Amino acid sequence: MNRKAIIKNGTVMNPSCGTTRSGKASLTESRVDVRIQDGVIKEIGANLAPMHDEVVFDAQGCWITPGFIDIHTHLRDFEQSSAEDIQTGTRAAASGGFTTVLAMANTKPVIDNAMVLHRLLQMIEDKACIKVLPAAAVTKNLAGVELTNMFELSELGAAAFSDDGQPITNLALLRRALQNAALANRVIISHPEDKDLSGGGSINESAAAMRLGLPGIPTASEAACVAREIEVVRSVGGRLHFAHISAAASIDLIRQAKQQGLLITADVTPHHLALSDADIVSFDANFKMNPPLRSKKDVDALIEGIADGTIDAIGTDHAPHPETEKHRCFAEAPFGVIGLETAFPLVYEKLVASAKITVTQLIDLFTVKPAAILQIDTPIIEVGEIANIAIIDPNVKWQFDPSNGASKSVNTPFAGMTLQTRIITTLYHGRIVFQMHVESDKRLTFPIVKASKL
Image (cartoon, rainbow, N blue to C red; front, side, top):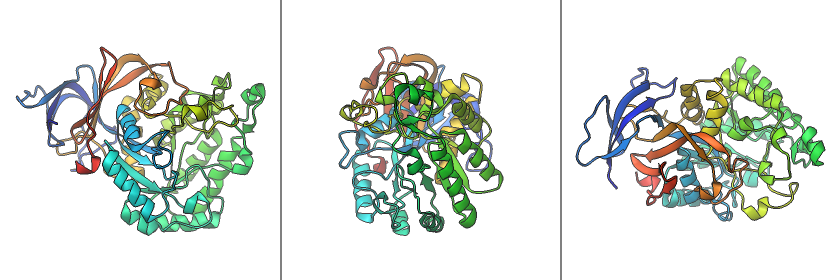
């Protein structure tokens, strides 16, 4: 595949808080051309003349942004490959503008030892078309009883630690985990939930639950867990990240912890911003996720938390499930929805189109802020940087059809929804890993490029 390309007539939209390696402020909202060679940005300027051997992308009216980072992706594979595998999951990510994803550890088998992590890394090398950072489990088999060997797993390539799906209820164990993770220079990602308070519920404890006759999950199940884990961080230090925050009470607690100087971060999902429990009007299990969709008051608190910096990032919590499982009755169906391909348009409409934040602040949530949480290189459009790039049309309107998506699964509450803004092209190390023909609304596919070989 040609390693030379030029992106013409687009507007570079770097993160608002981005800086170059030299420490200078980056270009922000600049109309320029971008030349790429051998996977690296070689030149940025106005009216650059294409060379005879360059692939030319006409980005007229489009944004050129750094590739996105998803801090919370479930790629399944292993014994769950019927729902998703690394090839289809990373293609879905590329379709959504992501060039880096953090893959959660709650696979079958769990990523809790060196042998399984080694197997995963080999699968990533063979199948991934973008960068996949593996998370490893905090405790063996996610059982919350015995810690994994964080030092060994970190040295092998684990980028973070999480028992996602299972809270660590033994706070003495969490205390030791935070100490070990700090020594390994890694963050622990918390699934904040008190399972006893959740009590086998299916949706938010609300009028919707009463109307449908479904058992409810109170917001206290999340907030109580957030409160006690913050106190553990206060006592021992370390870095703790709260995934998929959904409740106003949790936002208040995290805001206070940050003001007190604790190393606490948090993300929210697009579906918790775009929907509330009032949108659940039937027994469609595509509206079942954990944490559940909350009240409009909670959604407003999430938006306020993003606007004031309490929330650090958008995490998709892309959780694919086979149709056969999601077609069970609501109470028995698994939690989770897919989200990689709709993430940016949904959050753009909820936050930017409604003037809650700016476009560059939105790009922060998808790029520099998740990079800071994971302590990886800041993605930026600048000469000398790796050409991980998303080209976005902010004006196109399109209807999302998950059956035409890249994921193996179609479990989404957004099927048939009309969205504004669309990823047109995604480049990873200068190679096309996704491209859309807008005129025909058809997906172009390309041979897998092994991420580890670039």
